Length: 172
Ligand code: FEO
Image 1 (spheres, rainbow, N blue to C red):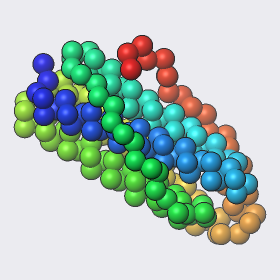
Image 2 (image 1 turned 135 degrees about the vertical axis):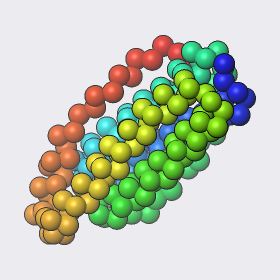
Image 3 (image 1 turned 180 degrees about the vertical axis):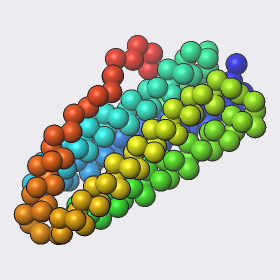
Image 4 (image 1 turned 135 degrees about the horizontal axis):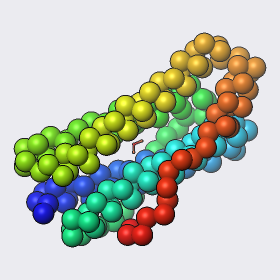
């Protein structure tokens, strides 16, 4: 059984994950509008990843017989229209998500909540991947230089990203 504090904290995280999805969806729309369809595709896949993260938490609450509460999602906030600053924003956002997941782990440790510790460990591993993905794209931009040709190549590569997350949750 989860403490009410943990239930509230996980519901807050669900909101953060859906905000992340919403942010990446908005970024995808802007990149598509600017002609970077590969970046748009990458971000759309990321949107699905974030919804998966949210639904995985929601399913966990259901499994623990705890209430899932969906709160208002803030407007997605970003101004970047160029690829490198956009991915720097993605990286900074992911770093903030990592910090938030760590808070859940710390609460689970404090409460001797072993089930949530195991769940939080999955997200901690996932955040290593999330930060690595954004970092590698920024590194590639630097390697290619900010030339039109380099950005075209990168856009073509990012277009190949495919979603691998299952979106068939029964309990949302
Ligand atoms: Fe759900 Fe990108 O962290």
